[in-house]
Length: 277
Image 1: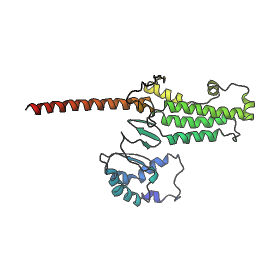
Image 2: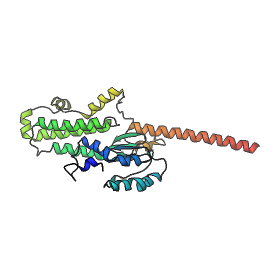
Image 3: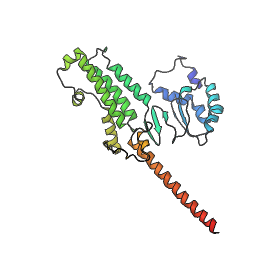
Image 4: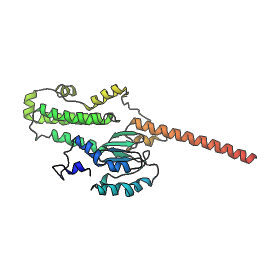
């Protein structure tokens, strides 16, 4: 441990959650471990993502470098978060993001945590004014939206917006005190927006415009019975989150199929030459 940290007036307590000083202190405290890791890695506070080429390298680094160094720092690994695999085969979650087949989305666990916070804010036992409730909701919406806006999250954001509006309508309608203050208003989406409620999908759209992304409207394509083609199971796979990733997977499969055909043709040519010689 750095000597100046030993001189801190408060010991064995740590820092409050969300404190920006934690980022600085984590970097100082874990610097000896950073220098000893031989492979490229990404660290966010105390979470490590190490990139290896061979299958046995992660286990070797963990056993010979990470565990001994953490023992010197009086730290332990969170076994529940320990994971390894291949990027193109195994879905991986890191810092609330879910990486799979070359894209990243929002972790399902983080979505559930966000919904639980919305439920807690809009619980009927809360006797706060509707302005206070909307302010609390907006704080959660802005934090969650700006953190996850770079991901492929359009569908998730649309569903979460609908969930937030549903919870807020329930709170306003069933809370008699709030109903008297608001009056007999139809609580449409636009009316809730006029009351000051923010939107996750608006955050995504503004980010997309800034980055010049294209947000396409989803359209249903009806198929006749018995017209399913080979590879259609990929479109229904629960592991693939949206149309973009589905197209990416299909494109990769087409490229692999093309490469296999080219190799097969070359092998046939070589066999013919051998037979003629």
